[in-house]
Length: 375
Ligand SMILES: O=C(O)CCC(=O)C(=O)O
Image 1 (cartoon, rainbow, N blue to C red):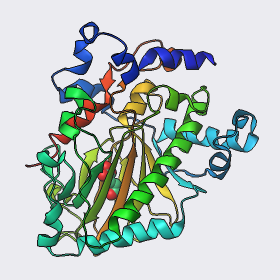
Image 2 (image 1 turned 45 degrees about the vertical axis):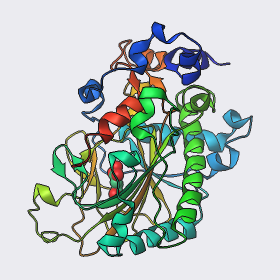
Image 3 (image 1 turned 30 degrees about the vertical axis):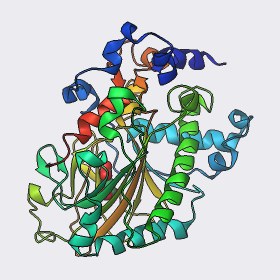
Image 4 (image 1 turned 60 degrees about the vertical axis):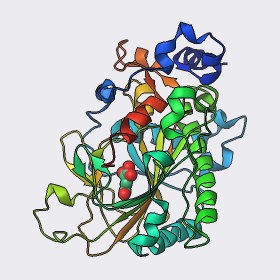
C-alpha cells in the first residue's frame, strides 16, 4: 500500500464507514440542510490561459488498465503525464484510442436525433418531474442555469436509486430511468453505451490516480468503487438569432457551469462547434469536434479531492449553427454517499491549506438538481 493509499483512506468516508458507526456520531453528514452556496469555493474556475484543448491517445492505458504492472509501463506513463498536464492546465482534454466503437458513438447520436424529432406529445410521455426522481424528458427552456433558461431539450438519466437505499440523502433521487418506447431500440442502445462509458471512465480514472501518485485503483477503493453516474441526452435547437453576432443571453444552449462529479465524457455532433471552455483570462475556447473522440472534463468532486490541482473548468454551449445539435454526455461520479475532502497528499503539494470543505456527493447533486428546473 502506498503512502497515498493511506492518505486516501483518511479523506474519503464511504457508506460502509458511515454504517459501521452509530448515526449519532455524525448525523450532520447524513441529514444536513442543503446549502448550494457551500461549494462556492469550487466554482471560480481558474485553469491557465490555454488556447486549445489537448488530444490524448489513451490506447496504452486502455489496453493495460488492469495489468498489475501498469505502473512500470512506459507507454502508460506517457499517457499519465499527458492526462496530468491537461487536468492541471485546462481541466479539459479529448481522448482517442478509447476502445468504444465509432459505430456505437454515432448510432447513439442518431437515435437521439430521431427521438427529439418526434412530436412533443410523444416526447412528453416520459416527462421529468420530482416524482420521477428528476428522470425523463425536459422541454426547451425547462432546465435553468443561474436563473436563465437553457435553450435545449433533454432526457436526464441517473443510476437507479432504490427506495431507502441511501436514507434521507437519496430520497430526492429515488427512481428508475424513463426510457421512450419510440424508437424501440433506444433503451438497449443507451444502456449498452452507459456500460461502456462507465468502463472507460474507470480506466481514465486509473490513469489520473497514477498521475496523482497513487496506485491505479485508488479511486475505486476509496470512494468511487460503486460509482454513481448521470447521463444527459441533449438536443440544441436552431435559434432565431443563431447566426447574428450579438446573441442574447436567452439564446444560450447551456449556461456556464462546472460539472458535479469526477469525470465527464461528451459525445458531440461532428459538424457543429458549440461547446466552449473558459480559460483563466475569461476567453471562451471552442471544443471543436474531433470525430471519433470524446471531450473529457474534470468535475467538482475531483477538484475538491485534488485541492484544486485539477480544474473543474467552466463551460457553456451556444449553437450558432443552422443545424439542430445533438450531444450525449456521460458523467462518472463518486459513490452517491461519498464524503469528499481534499486529499492530504494534494493539500501538502498546494501549500498545506485545505481550499475546500467536505462535500457529500449526493447532497451536492441534489442541491443542483432541485434548483435546475422551472418545475
Ligand atoms: O452539449 C455539450 O457539448 C455539453 C453539455 C454540458 O456541458 C452538460 O450537459 O453539462
